[in-house]
Length: 389
Image (cartoon, rainbow, N blue to C red):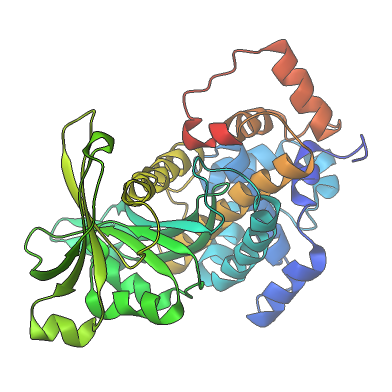
């Protein structure tokens, strides 16, 4: 990194210009655009994410206060909140979705060897969703209940990292299990889900694809027990059974055996029952795999605390999705530069440092080292699962 570049530029330069150009060209993002191309739109919205701006006017005022540095940050157009609002409303949000997918693929390669607390060679994914509340009067297209609007963020989290392998945005009233139709199932991988994703027809796709699922069982599940395996009750495992569905209609959707593991948490005393199509791993490992699902919940908590996805700069569906996908891009960019620059601090700390130093002109690695050495007690209240990297 050259010392003359701003910190903001050093973050953004991890995006390959040709990859961005292809994303824009794919959806005609710059067609008939004379001023303020997609690149300037992305830079402005990424700046808002990194510096925690509150509105489009806030973005405009902050950027215009440093006119001598805008060119060196990559901007080629005049920054106006009205122009940015028009871009967020009209430019296809899929441009930034595709950019995020490109960055995610790169980040996953960088974090492929990260440990996640279990001795498994296979990839383990946690699937869950979180609801982002909206004002019904401003976002009528996202009606959720009679007095409430919301969108739902579905995430498939690779627990080695963790990096989101897939993110989808839907209206909040969409059932969680429907997102299973969008999954490209990876043979040999484990998918950990809660009871909201119990659908036997969709679950059988994992069997056909050679992948494994681990999920909670519903209390009204009707089954035939085919076999009981020995268990060690001192581990908390109460039962380990091979079972078959009892109802004819259920069998039509899932015409195969699966495994039912009963487990009692030794700390809380809570009893849980898990279903899986893996018959080889120890029963305790199945319970531990399900326990790892909490990481996706902490991921949601982390991004809501550290990224601008609770307050939106536009009210259209396109503007909301644009902001969410650019926030994902910023998150993954931070994860990439952390690994590439071998920074020994959490993502939370990196974002805190970036937020107040985007206009500084010094090597990013040097800035982080300097900041952490001067204050070894940087606020770690948001680190959550990201302590592991």
